[in-house]
Length: 586
Image (cartoon, rainbow, N blue to C red):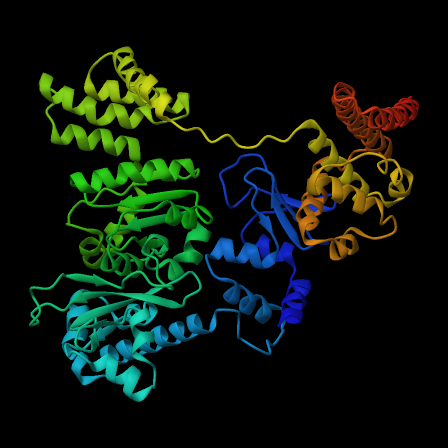
């Protein structure tokens, strides 16, 4: 299997693969484009065909074809390997992965459960009432097939008998999948419900959401029941319909976000194929990240009550931080997207196309709920809107919405600006500053930057490696970066790919990054690379001299004369070496 993993990676055209998601432009040895993993306006995302690697010098994302597919599609390594193997025509001899056998069985069980529920709905006699209910809700056969909708019988052990009695799976496995509950024995968790399979980005069933069938005998139970958190299913990383919507999201560069499964299916049926649903939970940063890799804009369609507006406000912060434009679909003529889209598909499409900017929505919704003709109303409106506008980081955009808000409120823009500035200043009060625990990112020093540049320059200029090979033998080069520089110098005839193959694990990432970063400096001349190497050498000599002089001082104070003399001899040798470097610098 290890050999096949390498074979698939070797045969995969990483430029072609990434080019399906990112617009790439050939620049020297590399291809460049805008990073799909963070918001940027200047391309810092680099792909190298020779090494089969990608690297973003803005957010740090990087890796090989497997890593890219896993990150962009939200799938695991096994799925990435199988997809790439299919593309390049490699037949995998084994599907067993370390620690993945139980997970594979769990996926088998979930797939069988989904098929069982779907059969009960579409072909089973007992699914007649469920089919009738869905057709009344304008969920036709095509939509049922697209989303693999099913039906769970009202009995306590129908699924259990099928998976354990007929298919031979164990109770413990079904419990781990979240399909059964345990009392005196095990019994079906989902009973008398319309079943919506929850699929991951690769289309595999990882959980279920079950809606009570009306007029059943279980009216006292919760209307919706979702799978518990399992090894397969994590609700904060799940978006219902994401698998079906991916293609339209990429094509239209926007995503419509609704609350429930019925909202999504009706929206999809109305021709808004770029719709996904959060399934009744709060939107998370992981979900925003999934969407931001494919879309530029997010259209929110939540309830217009206080809870819905609060959810919209929370979503804005996460979405804008990831570079997404945020709009709000205003619901008119129905209580939710499901009702409108199922009754009047054209009207729903128009509502989506006419979505308003989120700031306009927040201002207007507050003014509809409060009387701006009264002082108390103005106070409430200001308290609701000003904190929201204060979070806009772009000062120009903030000023635009400040003026619009003032105009709608009928007051001077300067007064509104003062209030927003007051709220903004409150966000960084002295108390908050004292309590805040800043996390400082480690900064890279001059020597490390020089070392990376030199490594990159030598990797792309094999003729220079012999020239500088002996320069760094008498000085200490710290860390993995220093080891990598010496290692590259020791292989003057090898290609970058050959150097990487022979490098120790701790050096591989350093060498990869140096080579990818050199794409930014492809116009550098041999002379400039040599000059950087000389500068680095001189810096390292001076560091070494400083260390030796400190040790000499300690030895002198402690009366260790022999050690002091030995250190003095080393210092003289380094002085001679520095003089030679000065000559090299000219």
